[in-house]
Image (cartoon, rainbow over all chains, first blue to last red; front, top):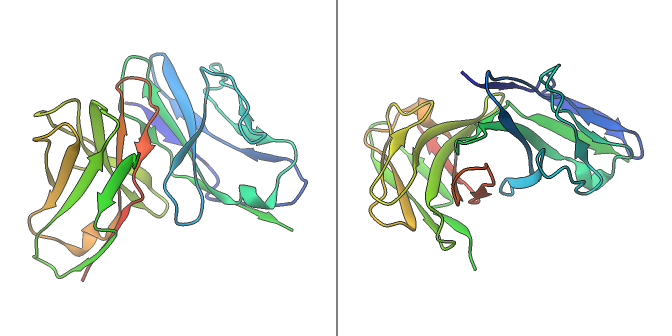
Length: 109
Length: 112
């Protein structure tokens, strides 16, 4: 069974500091990994997906198959980055997303 | 272009009451999903549909039923609400494989 783990429920950093949100997964096949973001009382939005290898709002994430991780990183956090972040996984030919528990990021001024 | 619309946005139910949550999408997506969001547990899949007239169970289907009579609508029903079903419910849709979901704004349900 596929599983996504986000070990940090809460993460607090200061503005301008680097931030890394951890995501580990377990899946026997070839997964597709995603990061979704939910700003306060808003709907979830797709932030990025590993297959597109793009940078959105300064965030990047690299899939490390050896460590089964897909950590989200940003070199300089901004206050507007404060939100709930969810890591998610689907099988390559599948459609159902399995979400992690979420990490609430707070960027302090 | 509204995307994914959920109604109602808020609801308070008494234990044992029934209700239906409506999800509507105008993007001609084939796949639709219902998730519940609980603190510390992330989003868990309740039921999903891969096309009009089809439904399938997700991770936590007990106590819920769904119907997809029209491609654009996906209904989630609670026949006899329980306090454990207090949650925020999100509907999502996608073209199909690949995980690029479009989410609704959520329904906050409280069962007392």
